[in-house]
Image 1 (tube, rainbow, N blue to C red):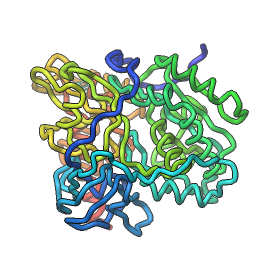
Image 2: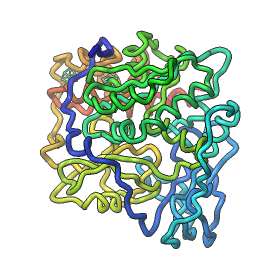
Image 3: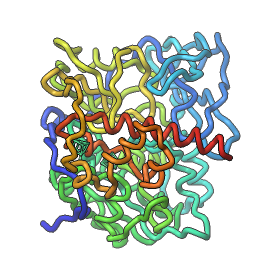
Image 4: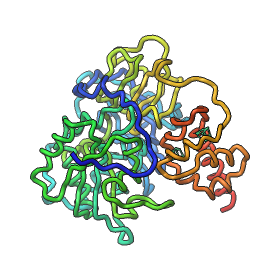
Length: 440
Ligand code: SF4
Ligand code: SF4
């Protein structure tokens, strides 16, 4: 089987997917209460549409805004609004709607009959995706309807469904490719119709042979859709890497894939778009991987938005022993101490990692081995960028392209001194943004 990979940098990492990759996706019991943040996406936060004491039904819109770049949020349970107040999230305090569940049946989810793609207008597709609150579900949170609005300056020829899922442990997209293949293809066809793209591609790493087979079967009737097999190399799922590997197009610094004619959506976003347009189902739940050595029953679970991490871990049989909770994959995720934070649209996984699964030692000084430079897929010099940040010279960090760092974690992974490179680069980006704001 011929495979495609991006050429420069990157690493082979342990997959650690065996705990969940063969397990069918499971639905879990709904929690007693949910906390639904009104800002779970790139762009403007939503304003609340409900007040304390009000009854809401599952799927009801509870927050929205007129801002161009934003996405509404919906209730994931039927119940009563207890509070509308700032609550802590992984990304700081966010105005949130707290809902106590009342209806054990959870009826009234607003899901309509399945519609056909044929005959749908572009504006109808875009409106339905927006109204359902669909955003990039692999972690970026960019509103999908906005991504699908094409401007004359940047015509789109290809829609690429990202099925790489290259981070260790993560298998939710893999299972969706196997179990909801038809909806992945429908989401792709909707994106092609909305953007006017003539070609569709589903790109999957070759460590998921059953997903590749399912996708090939599903696209057999579509002459304009291909399945491309990728080699397993991290970070193959990053947009610029994917565009290079699949289409051979280089996305230069300071530009994005859409400027090279490519719209990229991940697998679960495609499924959510199909649900939104064809079933009128809002995005109030998602599939995440719950894994790691401390989880008693690792699984891929359908989880309502707003459920606490503690409740999700309980639904996976609870945990044993000491662990560190990572929200997202181990390469790009965030370590958190507060298990009562709510799950949002952009969470891909909850990993309860044992001490043997994460590094917890003291970082040492840079020994100038240049491994980080050799492996950086963006051809940056992470050691130099961090040296400038530590000196407080963000202007020099900018000159050597700190803004092109995609925070993939490769440099930190290969660093023998265990330097906190990503943390420093994030701090540098924040300092650079502040200095740019002061200058404007
Ligand atoms: S995190 Fe940034 S600097 Fe480090 S390897 Fe990835 S792109 Fe390069
Ligand atoms: S890999 Fe670590 S020790 Fe080596 S040059 Fe980069 S920052 Fe320094």
